[in-house]
Image (cartoon, rainbow, N blue to C red; front, side, top):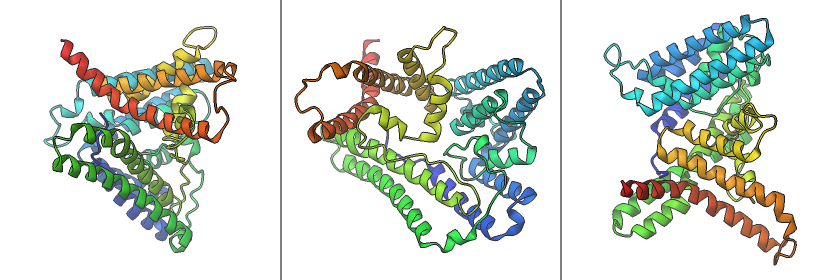
Length: 382
């Protein structure tokens, strides 16, 4: 089940992004070329720590792959090789998650060589790069720009910045640091992050204080501390990365646009973790999988199941994705056939609109809650 614990990487990532944004803004030597690459690599070293060796290996091999793709003059052959490269990367990522390569015996005493293949944000960034180079959307990145893109401190733990969205020239603007509006937005992002953390801590304190109030504790976790805490923590962190990226010359796309309280599951996902969600939508939703036409319901189930697998290769997250896919299919069916039920009471009234928002939030919360219960029940049968 969705927990209320805080990923310590978020605090490390925020500190790195803040310091490097300040350095890039005020030190001209660090604003381009070798200087920008150096501070980006330094940020990656601090972020990945013991996994940095694995990060270098994975990122280096990926650059060799895109170099080979770019060397292909036949667009069809280049695209086929890109698809094979993406498939191989995803398979390695999934196998590594299933067999817990991050727990393998480390090389050189403390440096893990394989753990970074399990980094969900690094993998999705590399998939987008293979796709864009393989499809001819972009040319082969120069090595220096590739280093900056892979090590960019504002995207190491999310959000996603596709290479095609990288600015061709870095326009540093230190005046953001003297802007009241910029500081206000940054403090609002910090407030979201802190509130999400506080919700998690508050739930833990409540559980410790009343350990036998299982029903109440589960209800608070399912409908308040779990989904709202997770959303506020992640949205606050991603918003901070957007804010800190601006003075350093990087305009990151918006990741969260107030998804809580949306009127249906489609609107929820259109505004939830958008930089990652749109990759799955763009690459999978209209895939025909070798058929003459695409099946929107099959593709929805595949898409959301893979979103769950991207989070973790375990039964909980796979079920989480599958249940969201089922919920989305129900919405698609309602959108297609619901207009025939024109005589539903209070249809089109504020009561029905607000009821739809409540129902959407309840359904999303249950998609987070039910997988653990299903697994628990299935475990009792064997």
